Every structure is written in C-alpha cells, then in structure tokens.
Length: 464
Image (cartoon, rainbow, N blue to C red; front, side, top):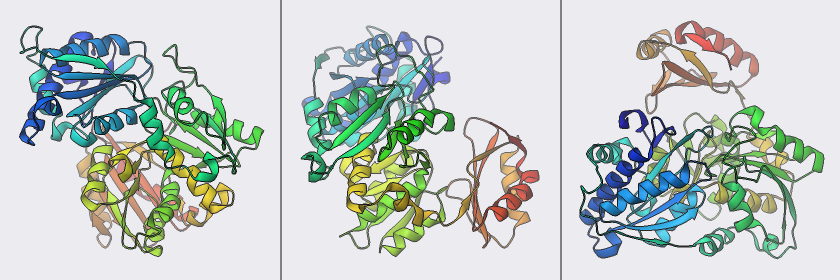
C-alpha cells in the first residue's frame, strides 16, 4: 500500500485504506531511521541526533495514526517529542526551538475529512520530499516490523504554545499589541487547526478584534472543504467582512499553513498581488534583497520588486522548491499563488500565522484600506489557472514552441512563454493527464483571444 500513499512532497491517503496504522508505523520507523542518519552525517550526537518532533491535526484518525507513527519511531530508537494538536507551521517552529533532527506533522492539509497523511521535515525544518528523503523513507518503511529495530527510544510531551506565541507576536506592530490601533478581522478557520492556533496566539491581542467563523474543530469534520483556493469556500469570510464592515478577512486551510485574504469590500486578493504588496515592506532597508515568487504570478510582482530596488526571483511551484529558493538566495520573503507565504524569520518555511501578522503590520503601516493598497498591482488581466486534459502533455508543449517560434521561452517549471503583448506558463500535472495554463496580457480581450488560440493545442478544457 505504500506506493499509493507516498507522494512527491508528503505521505497522504484515505484512512484506513490505503493509509492505516500499519503504514503509519512503517512511516514512523523509516522517518526516524532516515532523519537520525542524516543528523549523524551532519555531525550531531546524542539526543540532538535522535530527537524528532511529532504533531497532529484535528482529524478523527489522527490520534491513532500518531500513536502508530510514534511506535515506529520508538522502535527505531528515536527520542519522540509530542507537541500535541497543532498547526503544521508549529512543528517547523518546534523543530528549530528544540534543535531537533526533524519533525512530522500528521495532517492531510486541505483534503476532505476521510484523508490523512504525514508531512516530514528535517534539521532546521528543511522539507523532505521525494528527491530529498521520502524515497529513502519509503524503502525503509517497506521492511518495518514491530521488533525489527533496535528499540531504546523514549517519548515525552511538551507544551510549546507560549514560546510559539511569543515568537509570532514579535511580528505585530506595537500599536496593535498595546491597543492604540484596533483592527477588525473576520477569520474562517475552516474547522481546521487555525481554530486552535488563532485563539492561542492572537486571541488576547488588544488591538485585534477577531470575528471567528468555523473555529470548532472538535469533530474532525468540515462545514466546507478546508481549501481557501476554491471560490465557494470563501463565501462566509466575504459575507462576514461586508456585513460587519471589517478591515479585512482571512480564510485558512486545514492545517493553517496557507491562507487567502479578503479586502474590506469582501473581494478576494490574489496571492500574487498580495506578494507584490507585502514585498514592499520587506525591501525597506534591504537594497538589493531578493524576493521569491511563484512563476505563475502576475508580471507586476517582478516589476514592483525592481521598482523598490529588489531582485525578483522566479521559483518553481511547490513548497519544497520555494523553501529551497529562499535558502539559496537569502531572500527574506516569498509568495506562492496557492496561498503559501514563506519567511526567512520562520526558517524559510510557510506559515499562515506569520502571513496574517505580516498583513496586519503592512496594513497599519499603509494607513489606508486594503483595496487601495492592492490596486497599484492590478496592472494586467489574468486568465486564472485553466486545466486541459491531454494524454500527450510533452507533445503539446513541443507544439506550442513550434507554433510560437519567436517567443522567449524557459522551462524552469513546464513551459513559460513571453510573446510580447501576452505571456503564459503551461505546467504538466504530476499525477493526472492535465496541462495547467496561466496566461496574462494587458487587457481582458487579449487574454480571451489567446486562450482560445491555445486551446486546440492544449487539449480538452476541464470546466469546474
């Protein structure tokens, strides 16, 4: 069953088939063995080479899967530190706070309630994906059995909420902390881990007036799918902001590492536009600093970064690649179209809580409504992501290059084409016979015309 649950960036599947406690034990054993081996190669010794942080989300299957996961780690001889029911970025914090060999969060992020899985990170919360350790973990897990390891592990529980809260509140402006500036925010926790994180971290901040939506995560069920990228799931936040005349709204995903922002009019703010706006603050006092952005983003992000004296750096889609790009370039900040925002002061990881604090801080500094802050970045017309069914994905990309021989192209992630008055990125799905198109131009008419022009090459358009 392991072949069905090991993905490119994590372990994930429907509980209990194909993801069961037996599989969780194997994942725990394999993860511990791998992380301890890496820690040893990096010169760690004693508990610093054996300590692994374990957290979980609120799903019904999480307690039993975590128990099996920890049993596998103990069988491998690890020191397991259970930090309880937490958001995924909490485990990144804990891994660094405790100087651990790595961390595992039990979660299926934005997937429906019947799913679960494991997100693995190494020293410094570095992501562990298929090419950076997951394949090795899978190979070890396949032979894992109770009694097959050295044993000798030990387990402890730690409550790190106070430390986590102290770390995050450093990023709010003093005027909000002392209540001299008040901001009203509508927050939809999507019945996920933001329902725990937001009250514990931001609940008693004097200058934050929070209207909660779907904060109850005690049942492990969702009122709506915990995916803020789906337009319908933003309806409660949008309606709440409009009805209460709030300053802005936020909708978190299931494990609170992603979020979507709603402006004071109740309109969603594209995550690329938000990246361009937030980048301004990160470039103040940092001339020549890099800002990493998802290559599907509007061209205005790169333009805005250059205008502020920064260096725009395109990144491949996916948290593994974005985190690595931040590390490689020394960038203080990066943003992805999917709602992941990355911060050097969070060890180059993504954090919904840190993104929330960044938005509050930037809005206070701006001194005007969010819609007015975002408007300067709405320079072009965008198609949004459109999916096309195609059984010969590479053939379609080759056909595009032949059709537009004078386009400036690069292949960092799929095919990016710049044809002057319009530009596009076409990516191949890793798991489905799909091509994903994002196209931009100076006006909506050109966007519509060029999408029609490309459609016969890209395949059958998938309507949602």
